[in-house]
Length: 289
Image (tube, rainbow, N blue to C red):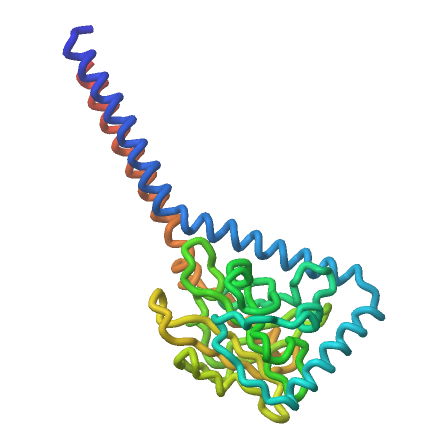
């Protein structure tokens, strides 16, 4: 083997290594946020599962007692006419009574929110502090506890656009008529979206309790990445059977799956391109031999 051939082989090996390193670096940077989101979605899903398992271990008498406490809290709340603050400003000095309600397993989880159309399943925690909103969805203190009932309006908020967590990022894909579910103390409450509005953060009038209504509102920031306004999705409670049928019909479609997982086929295409380049380099070397 001549010195020229040895030099060519050495250059080709170096080139191959450089291409592989560049590929791994590029794909790692491109895919990291999506992999991190998958991981965090899994973690939040496990918290939701742990909560539901913990509820199953609680006897019916204690669950009924917790339910009664929450109902009493909501009744007192509806009579006060509490003025709500922005869902992304933590309420200072949260009272211990509120923190103890619906906290059966002591984890601070009061329930689980599911939005089938966009594949969301998050634990719901007390309050809307930044610590809470980094873990999952937060219940807006001052709004009704999420147990349903006449003269109640519960408000659930979560972040949008976090680089490593999905949360409510895709909330803007929901439309009027779509449904979401609240699982609390072993009961599933179903709400159908009847109105969507974009408001300034200080505009909370539409979050108030409406007499004779059983309402729930999902809240996040908008526009995406700018966050100067709030996106409100107002839902009214409907029978479980009706909501389940609607949710099954409105599951994640091919387009939504492509939007969420586009990085997988792109990564595979880049991998094929890398293999092709390495093949061409090695093939050229064999021809020279």
